[in-house]
Length: 218
Image (cartoon, rainbow, N blue to C red; front, side, top):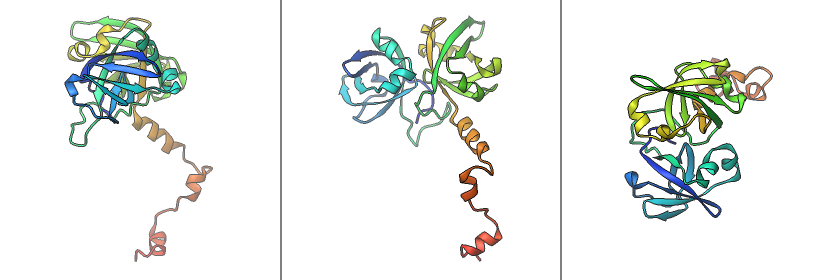
């Protein structure tokens, strides 16, 4: 698990059946098996190098994220080590499992911030969008400022600190970005889908005084 608070900007390049990620010095030392968020994608440290690591990468990850494209050109990536139980949760809970790609529609430099407008490639995720909800974009915990077209497009307000200390400053219009919706939205949807026709609801006992007595709570 991660928080979406970026700790370093690194680079990624292709290496045989995986990738090499550079720029991990700010949160070194790493250990084999560590989980690192690379542009929002949870990768496992398979081999240690100086201030960098090698990670295997699956076909599913290559298909669903922008890492393949970035690795071809030694592109910049946002880096964050896994959350420890003693850490503050300053952003929101980010799993590192990308839902899909988005595309940068516009970038506007305002007086006190930047505004990004992004559209989903896969419209199945539009339903999870709502004003002021959290979303992970390239691993960064951001707040949705406004939604359009039933959530298929949305805008994000970015403060100068976040802009300067992440790869957002390198974004271009038309670029693909990794998106992960808030886990809470998925859990809420799953619970709301449970109904009388659901095998789970039929099998789940109603907790009342009779049930408690049957289980020995009397």
